[in-house]
Image (cartoon, rainbow, N blue to C red; front, side, top):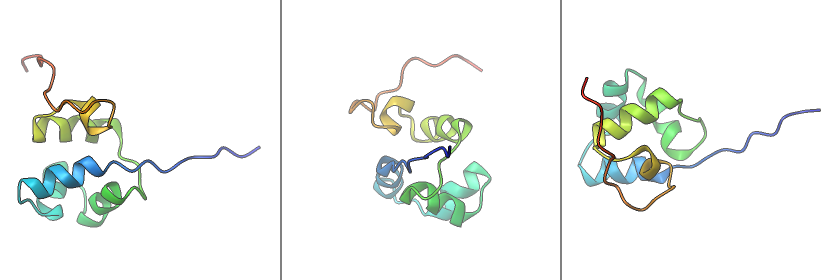
Length: 82
């Protein structure tokens, strides 16, 4: 029995990046991944891990729910102080 894994496409990370005039390389540097890895996140050929989702939400100041398209409201929840 093989497990079927669907590719998830999260276009919002591309939209957030381009709306802010950022390059894939700039966001990849922030995430400490290669540019081609980040590119694969944007097009959906590679799933991004939860820690990357959290970092992106913090970077773009949006909620994780917004990034994964569970809501259309980008406003983040109140965050814990670090």
